[in-house]
Length: 292
Image (cartoon, rainbow, N blue to C red; front, side, top):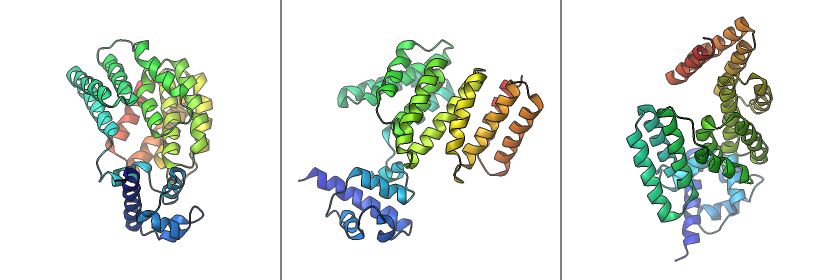
């Protein structure tokens, strides 16, 4: 039994299922990447394909890599997403017990598969627990994450996800260091939807955290970098989010009336364009914090 052929066959079936569901022909999906005949053979499990070409085909079809993985795994959610949902649940419930259980489970998983992800997850549990116990984050908990992120040559979905969930706990100088590195490394594969979304969120999260810490002199370069990524019409929420932060920056630097008006305008856009109520509340809470 050839395991490689089984995996490729699953990938081919998944690609065909998604392509047909989107009403995309083989010719359209293969355009300028591979021949239609080759793609047809791959979908039937009769040929293998390089990962780089598979990524290009998915991107050409506007298919997120996670959507493809879910299809391949019969829509079983990735374990890391499951973990992060439980992490957020523990934080929302301020439950040390849930954190401790998560930590024990990740430690057990690490002994089984030696996947570094589980060590990172244990550190995330420690960091989130520090917020509940109102104690400063321990350097031993964030430094391994920082070292990993700085040492990775190319950032992909996992790195952006890890940084997004640890950024809040990092010292300002470390945020500056890692965010600049994320931009440089993430730009290499910006054509991939996941990387573009991850990089955009990283910049916006950096801006939010720096504003929250009143580090106004450090914010402008990240706003400028973010603006270069937000020209696509499908990034409406991200553009409004940036507009809100620019208003917050104006307010904190003394232009009170203009800043408040711009934040209110951003909230109004969110209210009238059908985004979730939690998004509106997050903006309003942030505005109330900085305008006290």
